[in-house]
Structures are given as C-alpha cells and as structure tokens.
Image (cartoon, rainbow, N blue to C red; front, side, top):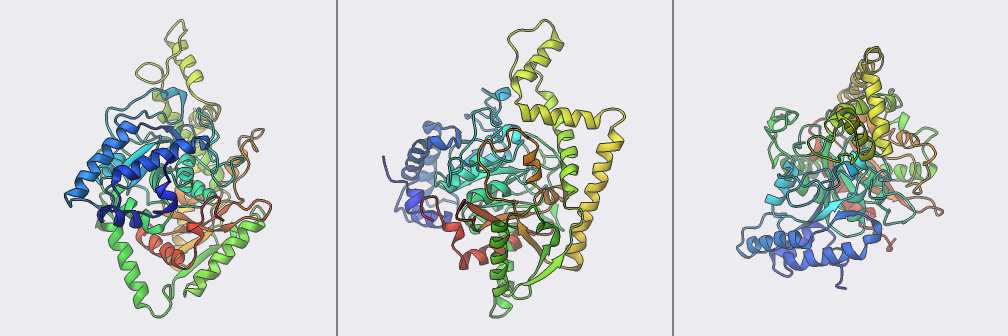
Length: 510
C-alpha cells in the first residue's frame, strides 16, 4: 500500500497546491494515494461510494490544467461530498434506503463550482439519513466511526465529512448545517468547519431537510483552507429561490469572502502590536450552564485566554432564549421536513414497495420501508404541528420565538460585541449507541448551535483542546459572527491557529 500523502506530507490545501503547481507531485498521484487511504480506512464507514474511474478522470483533467499553467487555487485538491449533494455519475442516497440507487442527471451547484475549480472528488460521504441527526448513527448504511475513537460517534449529520478529513483521507469535504451539522462533527473530530450566512451558498441540488435552515459549508483542517473552499462555493444562483444576490449591500459573488478576509487581516496588522487589538468577544452566560462538561468548559476558557493574549477583550453577554432554541428548532425543522419529504411517495422516484393493493397502500408501504426511524419520527412531529388546530399553537408560536432569538443576537452585535464565542457541544463525542433508548437525547446536545441556525448567522468551529484523560477526544470552539462576516470569522480563526496547533493534531499523533 502506498503512503498516504495527505496524512504524512500535505495536510493543507496551500501545501499541496504549491507541490502540484511546482509539479513535484501530480494530481493523479495524490488521487491514487487518497483512494488507497480510503480503502485502507474502510472500517470508519466514512464513504458510501468510491469510484476510482470517475476520480482518476477528474485527476487527469486537473493534471492537464496544471501542465498548461491554467490551474486555479483548488486544481487537483482531493475532496469528497456529503451524500446529500446530487452528483452526476455517482449515487446520491442521502444515506437512505428511499434513494438507495438514485443517480442524478445533474450536479448540485456546490458540486459544479468545486468541479469547475479543478477539485478531484474521492467519493460520496456517509451522513445521518436526510441529514437528520447529531451522531451519524441514523444512516441506513450504518454509523460512521470517529477516527479518534472507533467506539465514539463522529457527530452529525456531516459525520462522514468530518471523519474523512480528520483521518487524512481528503483535505476537505462538503457538509450541510441545518442546526449545527457542520460545526458539531467538526468539533467532535478535531477539524475546522464553517456554516456561512443563510443564502450565501446555493442550495440548488442539495437534498432538502429544512429549507429555511439548510446551508452548505466546508470542513477542513485550517481556517485558510475553509476560505479557499467557501469563497469558491459561494455566490448568487438564480436557480435557488433562497440565494442572496447581494450581501450587506455588496454583490454575492466569488471573491467577496477572500476580500473580506484580507481586509480583516490588514485591519489587524494595522491595529498595533497585538493582532486582535480591540476585538470584542461576547461570551454568553447561558452557554456555561450546568449541562456543560468541565473538560469542555476548561478547553473553551483556555482558548478565550489565548484570544485575550492576542488583544481581544472579553465581554459578558446574555442570549436569554438559548434553551428555547431547542423546542423552536424541533417544531420548525420537522414541519419543513414533513413538507419536503412528501415528494418521496414511490410514484416518481425513490423506493417503491414490492407488494400493495392500491395507490394509497403503495405510498404508505413505500414510505414505511424507505425511511428510517428518525426520519419517520420527524415527519410525524412535523405533520402534527402543521395539522389543523395545532398550526397556530405550535408552528406560528415557534416562528415568533425564532424572531426573538434573532433579536437577541442582533442586540448583542449592535451594542456589545463583534463576535460571540463559546462551546460547540456540551461534551466530547459520546459512544455509539449511548442514546439508543432515548432518541431525543441527541436533540438536547444541539443547544449551543441551534440558535445560530434559526437566526441564519455565520458560525464556525475550530479545535481548541481535548477532553479529560478518561476520554481525551477533541473539543471545538464556536465563533459566531454577524451576517456576511464570514471573512472576519475566518481571519480571527486563522490568527488563533497561527499560535496553536490543535488543528494540526491527528488521530494516533496526539
């Protein structure tokens, strides 16, 4: 077996880009190494499909661009896509039996943009079924394992994406974040991930869960890698009705986030000896409650002290409706899922039951056989809250609380702080099967991420430490920004990663 180049020699996009453009290594060599590594780590169950023929064809195209001197910053970079982005040639299953053999006739916008930029896809990644879950245990094809501890979950729903990056199988992966599903697995696997402002990245070709919440985002090791990916993925898309044409007065076009990132770096460099001089960090008191494990609290506190040493100022703030984000999200998201998943009826596409007597029974049997327990649970909750007599009491009330949550964040950003920081998860990764007897227990673990998604704000997770000696698993720090401030968030994270090495730690090397 060949050595894993992404694990031993090139652990960042910048390092590999320099080697590729200097022709010290070819895109094909890197792709073959990544394919070998993916097969060697098949036990992680991170990939749902690998097709060497498709991968090597993309690598060959990348090498032609490199030889001709026409490469982009991402040409030849090995990535993989969460299996909710439709892709030509590859199966797109959403980790569900309902779409077990579906092959899309077109690419999702995110997939198309990254392919056009010259990336090389290694395959499709495991996730919670239809992105519904917090541990990647709801996949119809079995759970993904955390590379740091194979008995632990990698987080969800983008667990396959985070695990593949953490294990060094790819340099980056796409994910989706509906209530924390990029940030949470990034935190639990010790890598970096960002959810951009809702509407800055197209949802076209992304299999829908909750349409007012779903947002694509990348996962990688370094903040600068996230910038390379997110800047390429973003931009207005007329095919997506939720896509933003302008961002805070500026056009939503590729290059905007990089300009914001470089602008933030220049401001930091001009501010004096300390790179983050004057940055106001809001720390919500509600994020440090009795449910937060002491090892997570200690790691987050240590990270905050590092930011203070870089010149930032800590400000105590309140987000009083933090706990209300859980019931609010679990009314709105299932309601939207109930509507979005109604299309899977066994008639046009998707699983169809083998035996039935009439159309109604065919639909009922097809949906019962095709959907897993968590998806059925959320469809039932969503249908209930949308039903006559309950719509006003639950759904409309949840939307009112959602607006209050938005106002809480805006009050903090307007009057008190520039960014907000805190934990991503209350604990390190739990063991696979820990919450089997109480499926809703995972819902409570999203308490620190849900409010951001309900408000449509950008937020990211970066590694900031490890748990107690009993369970020394990765811990993530959450950085939340105001609308369209992705460039600022990435610049702040980059400064932190220049003076720490948590993001460079790898399984087996701690």
